[in-house]
Length: 264
Image (cartoon, rainbow, N blue to C red):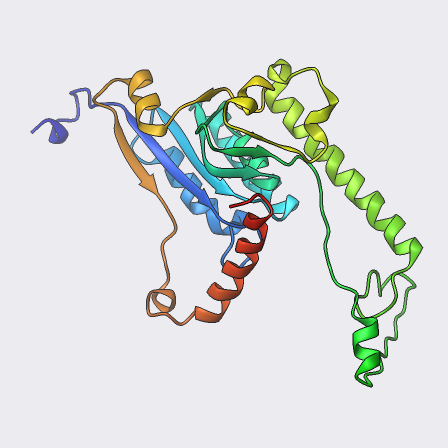
């Protein structure tokens, strides 16, 4: 009967949002458009006392990472709801950017966090196509339109331009971490080299706050009667019927490659 009587206090509610996978615009990965409704529901449905982010991501798009994190930070401030991030296997690069949207970050003793850096990887295929008698024809209006074309020899000016772009994104990433973590960060410049830390080591350098897990931590904060509401994506009918196999496989391969960089 308790749940049907509005003037009785109900047990505290914690909204749980799972942010798992590659961060990318569209497709299978995490994106601002794809997570917006989920995050909005987590902050508004059922009057939650707190929001818990369960993160398992090797990163991806810095733009999408920034947009998702900004949405979480805005809603937390507007609704005055504390947010805690719980890291599973990995919160690296853009995944750590998402974790920094929370007030505090809890890791497992085997969680990998960090990789505060920017990377760009591609292939040079000009010798391959030449060996197979393929001629590359490119016509542009604007000398930078064929920037880092994988079918042409690498140009020094392209590499220099890429480095400039990466430095700007890296600086923004560093600013985000510093603004969110503040004086909890250890006084060392090694935090922003792209290196990673595991479990309690991440706590020691200030990239995380404690080693723990979702249910015990929330019970300690809100009591043994705390309730959990899990918010996740709603799969379309076509996806439920298996009509997105190709995109799913392609996305999984890309995600698998990123996870492999961290030995996972």
